[in-house]
Length: 103
Length: 103
DNA sequence: TTGTTAATTCGCTAATCATCGAAATATGAG
DNA sequence: CTCATATTTCGATGATTAGCGAATTAACAA
Image (cartoon, rainbow over all chains, first blue to last red; front, side, top):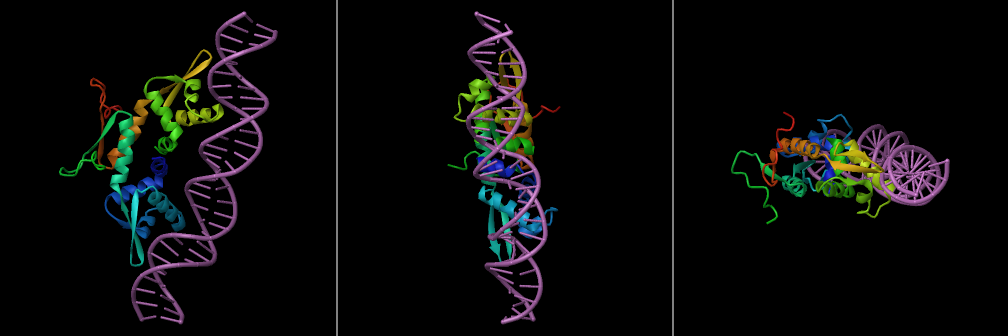
């Protein structure tokens, strides 16, 4: 849980997650959206990967990152519940409910 | 927002917030729940205060900390919304809704 | 094999962090 | 005023962080 919040504490990393919300993207495409160097972006990807928030897949010469929505859900859900809140999806409908992932 | 997530990234600080959920508590009472030194706890309180997550009030010789629920709500709500979720209170009923704090 | 491209890993630096004991501050009691 | 208590501030230390350029690795093309 700490590892997730720590990953979320950096605005660059939060923006990466938002970009990934629209679908998987390569390291290069993601890096192109920021002004920091590639090694720096690579370090940010590593933090997100170690927190479980993204998964990486090597496709030929590029590496594609994909948002792991359920990990984000679980962390947020668990924390929110401890404070008397509930997390509800506002997705199109038909999206699977978020509270029963573990079951 | 970064400042809130950074504050939340430490387990000691998250636990302090949970303890404060049950009502205001003095620095000493809170510190008594942890094994770290008082100066260290004081530093944690400062981080929480600077993030706006707690308010402090001097009462005689003690300092009382109080959870600022709405700040926690706003941060979590804003983040959750960016990912297509909604935050709903599961409180006893009659509790004010959390989505309209700003309005 | 040689070259090109994509991404990471390798040092390195400057800044921030969590932690502590000791010292300082402030309040209230006698 | 003096003492005791509650809490913070000070100063120091070791760990972690975000950042960079340079070097490395992996995949593919010619």
